[in-house]
Image (tube, rainbow, N blue to C red; front, side):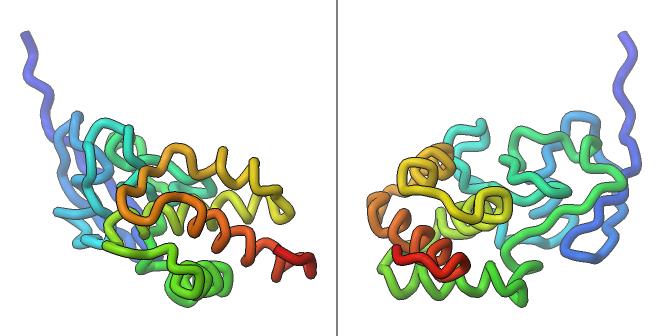
Amino acid sequence: MEIMREITVTVNVNGIPVRAAVSPQESLLDFLRYRAGATDVKCGCNKGDCGTCTVILEDRAVKSCLVLAAQADNRRVWTVRGLEKDPLMQALQESFATHGAVQCGFCTPGMLLTAKNFLEHNPKPDRAEIKEAIAGNLCRCTGYKKIVDAIAAVAASRTGDRA
């Protein structure tokens, strides 16, 4: 039986290329946290159930624990920290704070990235669509009403509608 050797990947993390040797089974989550120093990406369940590790890979929100680091080779990954100056991310963060949608903060990075990616693809969602969009992100503290309210408020402010 042949032993799988490490491979070298380069992942553009928040605009900075990070090159490292990884095992073929290393997750993007582990690559981001331990090789790129992106500790704003949290590890919740490590099996794709909670959404805490959500990042934006190219133009899609993904659970980084379910993506191999090798799959992100020569691709762009964005975390909350890398999007801190993005106007939509700023609006979402302010709205989460205003609406009380943040308590312990553990799920917040993944929830914010999911919401940002969702609003970029669906700028005028209704509440049911927002609930469906965040269904893969678990929050154990706030419940979801405040989170949905926060996302709906940002969507309304961007389209001139009322939340």
